[in-house]
Length: 274
Image 1 (cartoon, rainbow, N blue to C red):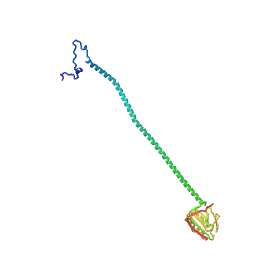
Image 2: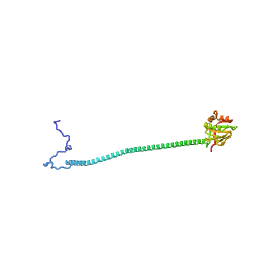
Image 3: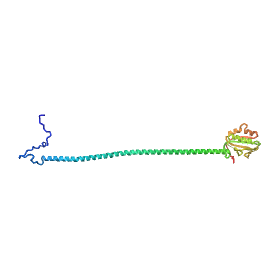
C-alpha cells in the first residue's frame, strides 16, 4: 500500500546478527574514544579485508595460469591435430604411390609381352622361311635331278624303264633293208618313245643305220635277225604308229619279213652309250 511504510527486504548485516545499539559511555566520551574489543566489529572488517586481499591475489595468480594452461592446451591440440593429419595423409600418399608403381609395373609387363610376341612372330617367320626355302630347294633339286635324268636318257648315258613296246622283226630271207629299220625307229620316236635299243644297241639322236639287207649295222654295231626293238614310252600310241596303213608293219610284210608288236607294262632299256 502507498500509505504504509516500506521495510527493507534485505536487512543489513548488523540487523541480521541482532546486535544491540551502541550505548554512549557514561563518562561523556564518544564512541570513537571507546576501545574496541577483540572479536567484535574489528574482526569482520579484518576478515573482509583478508578475504578481499586473498580473492584479489587468487585472481591475479589464476589469470596467468589460465592463459598459460589455455596456450598449452591449444598447442597440444594443434600438435595432435597436425599429427593426425599427417598420419591420415601418409597412407593416402602411400596408396597413391603404390598405385603409380603398379601402373609403371603394368606398363613394363605390357611392353615385355609385346616384345616377346614380336620375337615369337619373327621366329615363326624365320622357321616358315627356312621351311619354304628347304621345300623350294628340295623342289628345285628334284626338278634338276629329273632334268638330268631326262637328258641322260635322251643322250643314252642312263638306263630307262617303264611301260613300253616290244617289236620283233623276222627276216628269214635277209631282205629287210636299212630304210625299213630306220623307218621303224622314226615312227617309235614320233609316237613318244623316250628310250630305245635295237639288238642291244642304244639308239640316240645321232644314231645311224647302215649296211645292206642281211648285214645291217647301227653305229657300226652289227645286227642279227630276228631284230628286236625295245622302246620305253606310251605303248598304245607306239603300236598305232607302227600299224598305220602303209606303215612299218606293212613295209616289213612287203619284203617277206614278219613283224610282231607287243605292249609291255614294264620294260627295261639298259643299253647305254660310252
